Image (cartoon, rainbow, N blue to C red):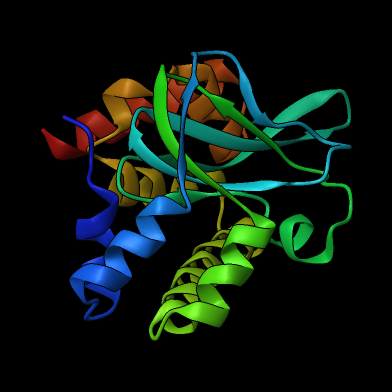
Length: 193
């Protein structure tokens, strides 16, 4: 069932009916089929997407390999916010790993919301704070944790998505080859049972 943008926004700020309608009117629907990109490296992130249905992954190319660093599902926003705000080319890729239904908004519409709604700046700040927290947590995990700990982090934070994500993407997220992930999963399941 698709997630509702208005409900998500209401969890961030006490919007009036008019304010919610104005914000909602700035978004446009978009279908993003599995395997297609919301953003490719080298492009400027022109839009922010709200995931109503589906699942995406963020990754970068690293030494002839893909390094997945984030998964985003229903009820959350997607973009390379650094590229979106600076209007510079992105080094990130955002790929649909399921068919997605998105609501998207461009830079000028975001600025309109900031200028013309009472809670627009608050909503924008809270969304960015959340994305900042996610990215810092991931960065610290890469520097501080061994692959087994990163797998535990994945299970803790993405348990509801684990069955929806291909194993090779999970291996990329953890920073191991798929064969190593299989061994990790086996050890993990033996600890639980």
